[in-house]
Length: 541
Image 1 (tube, rainbow, N blue to C red):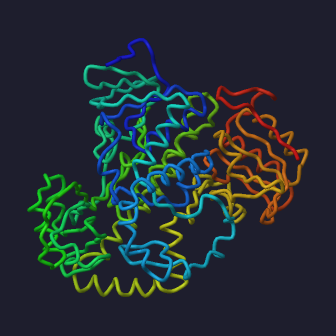
Image 2 (image 1 turned 45 degrees about the vertical axis):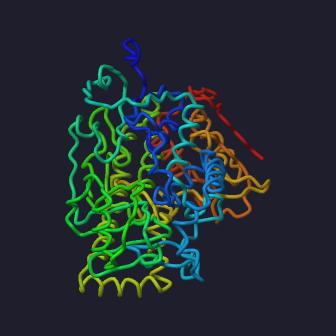
Image 3 (image 1 turned 90 degrees about the vertical axis):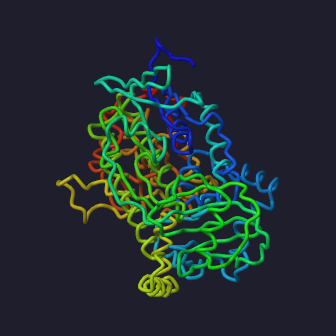
């Protein structure tokens, strides 16, 4: 095991899941040295290949992948996988595909449909290759991200488990078995039982579980004996996709989580939850989970940061955990890079916690609400019936689509600024940038692949061009006309795709300067080049 005794990395990431790998890609865009340590010796797990290993990616995650040039690669990889495993790919969605209406998502298992959603409620969303949802296999996503991270120069060591970490004012020392590693910053992306979180002393608070969830692949003596689809019963809920993929919840207070699964145990739980005397002849594989909902009270302690499940855990219902983690990595990467490169403004790195902790808390609340709607009691069934009625309305479906798809995400970028009149803040600020299509057919999303900021000037205003020159190493200036610019004259976009400033009025150089300084630090010399692999760009057409 290499100990790297004489070297120090810029960032050490614990965990080579999707969050850690995506963060590694983000940091390498800025030329930082990155080492990823992963406990598992083999990235390929049987659970990741099964239908219940599929994850639904939401709009912010798809936008992040699209803006970094990863989405097309991911969909191609997923298509190859589905072609090789058509039975597994189709089994999990068979009961959805048979419906006459196109499902748009669910909340606590209660579906809503595309034809009920009013997308005009989101006036700043434009058509985009990213879309709003996409099911992918976890293994496929990790394969694509690992390939990109290695291609960018990140080091990944597998079979290495973090045991302890000690921070100082300048760096962090990590102990992993007999090996020792040093880095200027450590990011724990090592899951819900994070060793980094525990070793660094983060508080982890929330609510304890009400249930044990099961995701299993089994053989049934009579596959037709168990009604397929999602079923609510007097004792719980189960989802069955023939021939043998089953997810179920047993409201036992989480008592059976992480116990060794046996054929007899799974059969007993399935009989109790379903009310059907089914007989299982084989348990191919399976896992358990709970609705435990916990969140770190802070995402940073000194030079240690948390992201993904290390920072927050909740039930896997709706697949929000993975999306939440990718959002953490997209938000953190450029801020940590700017801090390491000495370009960050005061408080930039602290904005990671300020922005993402609130998003995580909202997702945890949504997870708890879903569990409340699933409890096997008469009162809960009555409440669920009312929610089902609401989801069948245009307002209800639109509201839940906004939450489940993530299209309503907006950071309050001026929450701590008493000098800002919030009534004067443009409604696009804090939201994801629209995917403008330019007159030459190119799209905005393709201009963010470098991981740099972007000043988009629809009017080719000379004063904006001159102003942006001081940040040319960190912000690309693009002057182009769009087919539909939504009434905007110009906007400043952060590297994560979030709009930092927008104007549909006069030039407003004072506000633009303030935003540039806040998110991109002190201006440098004109023509100065950063240390990342991409050169500064100034495009006027």
